[in-house]
Amino acid sequence: MTTDWLITSAAIILLLILSGLFSGSETALTAASRHRMHSLAKQGDRRAQIVIDLHARNERLIGAILLGNNLVNITASALATGFLLSVFGEAGIAYATLIVTLLVVVFSEVLPKTWALNHPDRMSLAVAPTVRVLVFLLGPVTHAIYIIVRATLKPFGVELGAELGRAEAEEELRGAIDLHEGEEPETRHERQMMRSILDLDEVEVGEIMTHRRTVSTIDLGSKPDEIVDQVLASQFTRIPVYRDDPDNVVGVLHTKELLRELRRHEGDVSKVDFDELPSEPWFIPDTTSLLDQLQAFRSRREHFAVVVDEYGSLMGIVTLEDILEEIVGEIEDEHDTPVSGVRPQPDGTYIVDGTVTIRDLNREYDWDLPDEEAATVAGLVLHESRLIPEKGQVFVFYGFRFEILRRVRNQVASIRLTPPSTAEAQEASEPDD
Image (cartoon, rainbow, N blue to C red; front, side, top):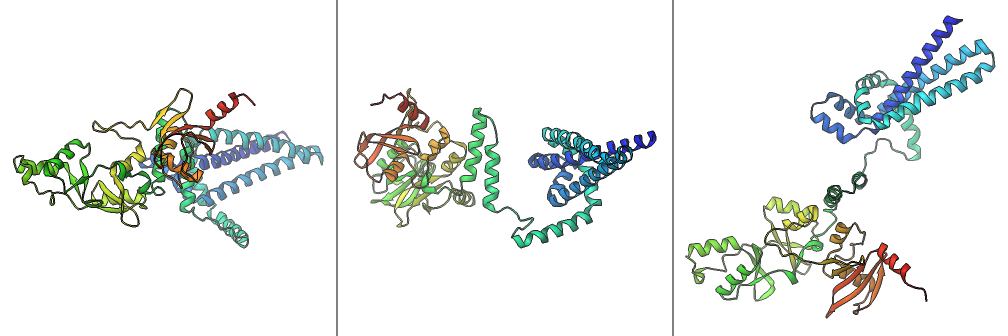
């Protein structure tokens, strides 16, 4: 009896250890970082490549592990039940059920899975070679089981192995970006950049372009000296030129080309042919997505485009730098003029110019103002209020408080914007009537 007890106990312990390995392997391999595995595989780690291969055949991996785990658990239960029946009779069934369940839950499920969840990459690399052998040996059985399961679920409209669509894959990627934890400025900026990259195909050129009202242009009908003075006074290297009508853009003047001509004519402005000097303008519709425009800039090897609406009227300009700023944030050089479009106030409010874009505010302050119907703060107020507001009028949209501070003709020029937390605090501090 003593010998049988020792042999049975040793067999049960061995089976519980195997069960723990199966449970821990399943958790580790499913929780392992695929990005880290790809990085290690590129560095030559063969075990990481095995993990990637196992993920590629995920249904066979899970099937083999579950099959092996159930085999050892059932065998351990059968051994314990048979031995305790011979010792305690019918009561041995209850004892075996209680003891084996407790051992399996603690030592074969909770303990290994908890450790695997805390060290998924390390454990997955350690067990991957062994699990690959198990998947190979149990492959025919798991494949047969998979066929049965697929045939059973098909009448209910469930398709196994269907790949994620583009929208689902993008949402998964956005979720991974949101899980990029940390409130440090560097981490926050990284999250903003990655989100902006995903938004490139959803944002149109018309939302980020420099509006025609603020675009520096030159009339080719001006005197040569006046044209040169305007070029020198401008902070830009590429300037749209028109003839007679500002909508009639006939070219783009590059300051370097002008300098070459002046050098060639020894500084004699009168000899410069300003009709031939500008390059051909590149017109694009305002509905072009930033992703398409970025690819177009790369393929054409150009950095400057003129934006027009559906009627061919000039709307503004867009540059490669504008699109890059949508990804990395504002890029300033020694020639940029700082624009104080947003001025934080001591009371927690913000004085915002009407031309400030909603995207810039959302990105800078982690707000969630909608930008589907309007690109600027003034446009949002006009869209939501359905009227041209007067100075002093106050609106509340999406939890934000908008107070009109200044209006120039029909244009909202300045707004006091109060975010939700500050607006709620101000309401709470106001005395009741």
